[in-house]
Image (cartoon, rainbow over all chains, first blue to last red; front, side, top):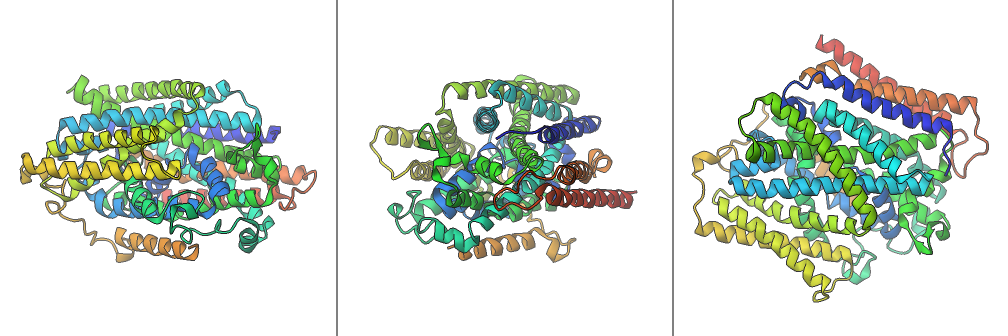
Amino acid sequence: MHLKWIDYFIIGVYCVFVLGVGITLKRFMRTSLDFFLSGRRIAAWVTGLAFISANLGALELMGMAASGAQYGMLTSHFYWVGAIPAMIFVGLFMMPFYYGSRARSVPEYLRLRFDEKTRGFNALTFAVMTVLASGINLYAMALVFRLMLGWSIHATILLSAVVVLVYTFLGGLTSSIYNEVLQFFLIVFGVMPLAYFSVVEAGGWNGLVARLPAGFTHTWANLGSASANTMGVGWFSLVAGLGFVLSFGYWCTDFLVVQRAMAARDMAAAQKTPLIAALPKMFIPFLIIVPGMAAWAILPHGNFLVNGSVDYNLALPLLLARYYPAGMLGVGITALLASFMSGMAGNVTAFNTVWTYDIYHAYIRRGAPDAHYLAMGRIATVGGVLISIATAYLALQFHNIMDYLQLIFSFVNAPLFATFLLGMFWKRATPNGAFFGLVGGTAAATGHWLATQSGWIVYASQMAANFSRAIWAWAACFALTIAVSFFTVPRPEAELAGLVYGLTERPRHSELPWLRRPEALALLAAALVVVLNWAYR
Amino acid sequence: MSDAESQLDVRWPIGLLFGVIGFVVAAYGLLVPPEAALPASAENLDRDWGLVMLLFGLLMIWGGWTAGRRRR
C-alpha cells in the first residue's frame, strides 16, 4: 500500500488539530481538578463518546476485524454480551456511588469504602497495568504501520508518543476527552465506506451467509457445546466468563473508562455517560466485525498469508487497499492512527491521575499546595509516556508480552469486580475482607494460570481458559471477602453514607422529563441489544 | 459549564477538522479523477465521501455556533 502526498497531508492536518486542541485548552488548566477530572463539568454526550473512544484503541479496530474474519459473528459477543449489559449496570447502579462519593479515582473510592491498604493494592496494580497497556498500544501501532506502509517502527513510536504527550501534557483529561470525541467521528467516517463496499461486494448479508462457512453468521446457534464453534467456548463459559466477570470487571471498575464519567458535569450526566456510550457501541460490530467477515468471504485467502501462515490482522488493511483511492486512504489511515492515539491517551491520563492522587499524594507527599499536584500530574504524564515507549520496545523484544498483558488484566479486573459488587451492595463487607478477598482472587487467577500452563487443566481454546480463569478469580474473591468479613469488624454505618447501597439516597432526577433520565436511556439500550442478539442468533 | 467547555465547545474542533478534511478530499476527487474505479468502490469515492464529511463538519460548526449564542 502506497500513500500519496494527499494522504500524508490529511494525516498532517489531523496531527495539527489534536495538538491545537491541547494548546487551546492549556490556559484553562488552573487546578489539579481541571487537569485530572476536567473540573467535573463536561456534557454527557461528550463524556459518553469519550467513554467508548478511550476503549476503541489498538486492539479493537484491527483485532475485532481480525476476529470477524476468523470467528465470524461470534465476535459480536464482545459487544452485545461482553459490554452493553455491564455499561447499563455501571450507569444505573454503580455511578451513584462513584460520582456521589466525590472520589477522584477508582482506587480512591476503595479507600473511602474500605481502607488504605485496599486502595494501595489497587492503585499499584492499576498503574503498572495501565502503562503496560499503553506501551502495547504503541507497539501494536508501530507494527501495523510497518506492515501496511513500511514506516519505521522507531519513527512511528516516537512520533505518536510525542503527539499524545503534547496534547495530554497541555490539556490534561479535557484534551484527552476532546480528542477522543474527535477520534470517534474519524473512526466512524474512516471505516464506514469500507463496511458498505465490502458487504455490497459480498452480495449483501445473504451473500455473506452463502460465501462463509456454516454458522459463521450466527451468534448463539452454535454455543450448545464448546466443540460446536470455532471459538471453543460454550454458552455458560461465555455468559459467566465474558458476559459477567470479564465484562463487568472491565467496564465497571477500570479507571480508564470510569474516569470519563467522573468528569461529567452532574450526577445525571455521569450516569448517562456509559448509557450514551452503549448506543453507538452496540453498532460497532457492523463497522468492524462484519467488514472483517466480508474480507474473508471475498478476498483470496492467499492474501492473508504472512510467512506461510494466515494472519487475520490483515483483514482491515486489505480492505483499505482494495476500496480506498488516494485521499480516502489518508482518511482511513488517519482513523487507524486516531484509534491508536485515543487508546494510548486514555491510558496516560488514567495513569497520571492514579499516580498523583493515589500513590504520590497518598504515600510520598501529603498536604502540598494544589499547584504542586498539578505540576506532578504533568510530570507523571511525561513519565507515563516514557514508560510506555520503554514497554513498546520491550514488546518488540518479546512477542508474547501481549498474552501476558491479557493475563494481567484477568488477574486484576476479575477479582476487583467482586470487591466492588460487595463493597457497593453489602454494607457488612469489611476492609480486611476486601483486601484479603482481592489478594486471594488474584492468587486464584495465578493458580489457575499455572494449572493450565502445566497442562493439569486443559481447555478447548485460550479464550475458554481466559473466561474460566476469570470466573474462578471472581468466585474466589467473592467467597473470601464474605468469609473474612464475617470474622472481622465492619466500618460504622455512619461512615458509609454515599458509598453503599441502602445507606445512600438513590438519585431520582425528578427535575428531568422521564425520557431524559438515565433509566429511559438504559431501557432503550437494553431493548436494542436484546433485538440485536435475537436478530443475529 | 467549565471554563474550557464554554470557551471551546468540542463541536468547533470536530467541525473544523471535518470541514478541512472533507473539503480537501472532495476537491482532490474533483480535480484528480481516480485513475481506475476500484473493485466495487464508488465511481469517485473521494468526491462523494469528501462532501459527506464536509457537510458533517459544517453541521458541527453550526451546532457549536448556535450553542455559543445560547450561552451568551
